[in-house]
Image 1 (cartoon, rainbow, N blue to C red):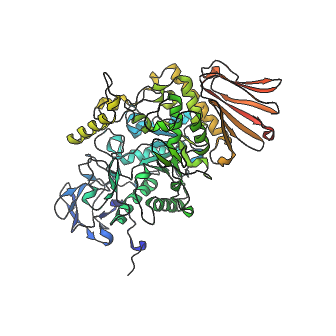
Image 2: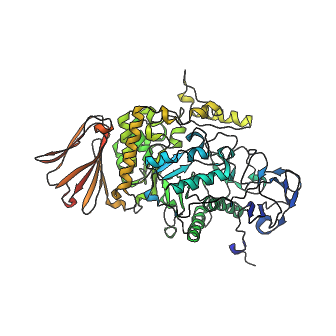
Image 3: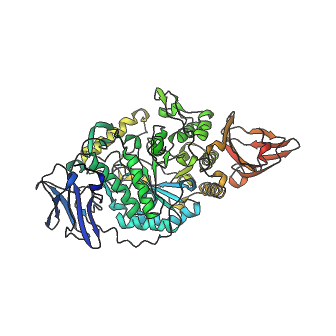
Length: 621
């Protein structure tokens, strides 16, 4: 008899409640018996089904019951598909009816990636209270800034109360110290009612090292592949059907039950799957099915360091059809240029040429030789529109993985900060801002944990110390990842303590975002074939060609003033934006001068300007 997907369980794993009736589904293919045991010692025996599943349609369990799962009548474990871990990663799981929330966002149909200004934030350090309600209370601030999408770093249950989120071990449970499931639903509902999309960072390539009980239930992990962070998830070996179902149902839960608009998939290059149907392709197919059913636009963004367009190519072209991917090399090219850093992967960057290439192609390495990797690397991005790439000058990784959690505001001056903002926000891609960047936050963003396992705590400490041993000398010491002070130092400054220059930078970001959102010429949704990028010395020129008019952006990465005659035949040019104007703390109000010979650009060091050029058929220079 042929076994097909039609006979495969489609329900979410774990204990679910609908219309007051609870059901249970547990994947434990090697078990002889599976029981749910409550804290009051009520035992519910599950029935053995197909494909290694155990279940019960009417379990008799009720909302908020505490329980564990007993395998073979012996050890009891928290439910790997638990919706709530009120006592932390080692304690009882709690049954939650997540369908009870009263949503008021029915008019929200989702948002287009190409229209987004994404704001990445860490729930624990973004607000004074460090929880979802703290984020809700700052939504008006984000709306005023012009942000229309937030990206939450992972919120799946992790050990303790302080973590970046990538050590999560209960993918379905919302972190209890952030407020749990209902508070996350409140946040998403509030965002949608203010016109803000919500992207959630999820981790499908590994599990954290503490409180990880998945392996007690089935072959969730494989030794065929390795990741830098722990055992690889089993997406293509024996038993992988149960693993794939687990994570696909997790993604659908966030979108269906929490109204999350999109998922940012952490390090998709570490999702190893050499089967005929790649996990990401199957996941995308299920998300598209959900979109058809709901009439809403849900999407997937991948983080990938392979420069491989296969992840965003359509299925018919052999791709996995993710809606977009992070472009780390945009960051690397920009960071190396403005800081002069050449260590590690920055050795592949530096100078104007990588800036020009990343503006035009997103990837700097698209089949050319990489000295850092000592190999030819990457693929061409021809035919990909700009909305396929998310770009940034800072993010949690690029700041937090530095020894001292240095932000760009610690490394460069005010004029460069404005130049960096203009290069990113006005790029032909989807811009992402990391929390606090918009006003030059002085607090670092450090790596922090709150593990309970003493041996693990020391392992993490020693690992971080070894990673940065070449940088530690004298008074230079790495922060203790486990210390509460490390976490507290990473919290954003209270707005009342933000100084005058920071407030000016905030207004500058606000104006840039308004310009980006109000002018369709900045949209990354049109073909990149309409874009011309060139350089003259350290002047980078981005031209967006249109039939009637064109948009020219001049970025001066030199400390010296640049003068350039723009041509005699140009009929009309007007200044749209200038970072060196007195309004933004600069020394001049006009970088575009009309002379008898035409228009002349007069651009101070570390500044940029945006010029509208009409009658583009006569464009020269």
